[in-house]
Length: 290
Length: 54
Image (tube, rainbow over all chains, first blue to last red; front, side):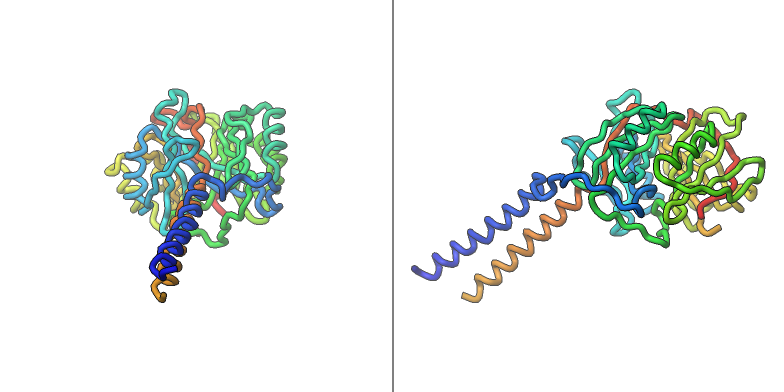
């Protein structure tokens, strides 16, 4: 057989193999969900992902891109547009368009790793919570979205693969969660049971007890909303690590956002700013350590 | 004959790179839910942020 024919056949075979690999991945053959495996004890209790629900994805991309230097990749989930955000090379968040959902308010939805999402959802239901998304399989996890008994939305994820858990948080990335409770005692009982947290009070100034929830290490804070605090309902507030929150806050309004709580000496030595993005989703900017 | 292995290696590397890039896209979850905002319009926030990250 002439060598030119052999070369063409080999080239065709090679190209076919390559194309098959690409198609297999693109159509999910390589990513078919494996049977749900229990997250390791070290995983349960970690907040492992955040999705922004917004009615203006373009405005959100401009805002977070300018503010944090995030870059974005347009993808799809279940045939619907889904934007992935990266800080450097690290995937940090997703952006979901909820403009077609009149009942969806702008907010960050945080995902908590649990050992068994089906059992956790059953517990949420039994304790008076609401199930938005029943447990379902995705390539990376078995997930559900619920509202806890106080109405705070929360994602649950039974991980199928390791998610990096850096001991030292990186700037412009999420690193902490805080639960603002209408009933702190109830919330403590609920989340300690849900995720196996241990808790301790680390501050009690202003008559507010600040509880730190620990699982392997500190994972989140929790405190009671004052009775005088109107307009804020129980929620999980995500924190982004920022070296100079005040300097960044000065740019927020120019980018279409709003400063909800400016830095103040009585709030963690001026190291905390709470902002809302152009859509209205709240987010905390925190220097750490402070 | 030397051209064939180079083409083969190049094609495999290209396919692996594209496949790897495509597989990265399954990160995240992407659910929007009918949950209203928990910070009402114009809410000033509770202003009592004691404690803090550990």
